[in-house]
Length: 179
Ligand code: PRP
Ligand code: ADE
Ligand code: MG
Image (cartoon, rainbow, N blue to C red; front, side, top):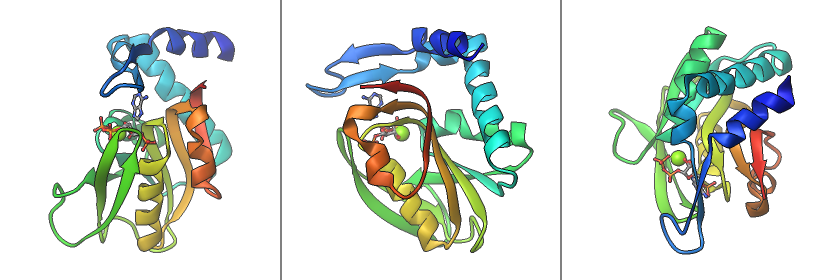
């Protein structure tokens, strides 16, 4: 049953006040990854949602670095490829880049210019949506490549930071929500 499975996931997310800086309540997913049942449940739920909602997805795009924990395994479940959205300076060859602010800092994301073709349908995956700065930058990269973002999917959404509003009109899907 869905509620029970979500509760198991909730039990495997550890809150750490004032990490990595004062005022931030850090949601640590390491216990979730360490428990194979919980980890599989995350992938099961995301897979079921995407299969039910989107008849055709060309690629899963995983966001560096915690999005890489879920993106590739989900792409394998769906039988499709995975493309990488990485932090600056990690990808060889021609790239597009977008700088952004996140809940506790500033950074720049990149994608290889040939990662996806115009019109291809992509689902973006990350572990957590906070202010939406990171996911928004990823959407901008997809826009630069003229790909279609079907959805921004995350394990955890921090509702009070209003990331989903920042991402409009792109739809956001999350398994767990916190205020
Ligand atoms: C964290 C998290 C998300 C992002 C969310 O990544 O994994 O990607 O912050 O914050 P936002 O919605 O305010 O942008 P972080 O940049 O800390 O790095 P990591 O994934 O490499 O750990
Ligand atoms: N990334 C941005 N904000 C975060 C938070 N509060 N917990 C974990 N990861 C985050
Ligand atoms: Mg991240």
